[in-house]
Amino acid sequence: MADTNINWYPGHMARAKKDLQKNLKLVDAVFVMLDARIPASSNNPSLTSRLGGKAVLVLLSKADLADTHHTKTWVKWFKDNDIVAMPVDLVSGRGMNVIINTLGLELEKRLLLKGKSSRRTLPRCMVVGIPNVGKSMFINRMAGNKPARTGHYPGVTRGPQWISFGGKLEMLDTPGILWPKLSDRDQAMKLAVTGALKKEVFDPGEVSEWLLEWITCNKPGLIKERFGIDEVSLETSDLIKLIGKKRGFLAAGGNVDRLRTADHILKEFKEGKLGRITLESPNEKERPSRTSGKTE
Ligand SMILES: Nc1nc2c(ncn2[C@@H]2O[C@H](COP(=O)(O)OP(=O)(O)OP(=O)(O)O)[C@@H](O)[C@H]2O)c(=O)[nH]1
Ligand SMILES: [Mg+2]
Image (cartoon, rainbow, N blue to C red):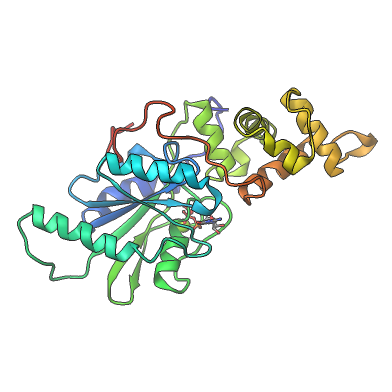
C-alpha cells in the first residue's frame, strides 16, 4: 500500500502546507492535534518542524477511544520532552476545561522568555494536525457552537478559517495535512484504521487484516470477547472469513462477503466497539525527538 500510486495528497493539502508558513507568522500559539491512539504516527513533522518561537500545546484527541494507561504514558513522555500534552475527548468535552488556563501559562512563559511583561492584544492561535483528527470539532467545542465544519471523513476543512472565542482568543482552523508519501507500511496502516486516509486510497481487506493481526498479537482476548471466536491462532484471512460467517455477511453462493466483513471490522474499531485501543507506545521504536523535530 505504501507504494501505491493513488494520490492521497490532493491539491488543497499542498496549498494548505504553503499557507501554514504564512499563517504561522500571525499566531502566538499552536495547538498540535495528535490522535491519542497513534501519537507518533499522527505527528507530521512537516507541520511541526517550523514551530520555533511559538507556544506549542499538544492535544491528544479521541482519548475516549484510546487506552487510558497508554495515554498517561504518552502524556508523561511528552512532559519528559518539555512538551505540554493534554488528552481530550471531544465528544463528551472531557479534558477541555484546563486548555485555556494551560494556554495562558504557556503564553506567559513565552513572554517572560522574550523579556516582555504582559500582552496587549488577544492571543491568536492555530490548530494543526492530520486529516480527521478532530481539529474543527475542537474549535466548535471551545467556541460552544458550531462555526467550523466537521465530518466523519478526512478532508472536510478546505481552507483556513478564523474563529473568535468569546473575546478570549482567536483561533484559526486549518485543513488536515498528510505526508506526500508514506513509506512506512505500519504507519500507513495506522493512519488508515484511525480514519486519516480517505477510503478510496486503501484496500479495506489489507487494512482489516493488519488490524486483526495487531489485535491477535497484542489483545487476543478481544477476538473472543467481541466476535465469540476462540481460535486466535487462525491465519488472519481465515479469521476474517469466520467473523464474516458469524456476522452473517454472505455473498451470492453462500460465500463470505470479505469486503463487507472488512468494512465492518474497521467500522467497529473506529467507533470504539472493539474496546479502547492504542496502537503504539512511546518506547516502541525511535520517536520523533520533539514535536519540533526534523522536516521530511
Ligand atoms: N470518539 C471521538 N470522535 C471524535 C473526537 N474528535 C473528533 N471526533 C470525530 O472525528 C471526526 C473528524 O472530526 P473533524 O473535527 O471534522 O476533524 P478535522 O481534523 O477538522 O478534519 P479535516 O478538516 O478533514 O482535516 C468527526 O466525525 C468527529 O465526530 C473525539 O475526541 N472522540
Ligand atoms: Mg476540519
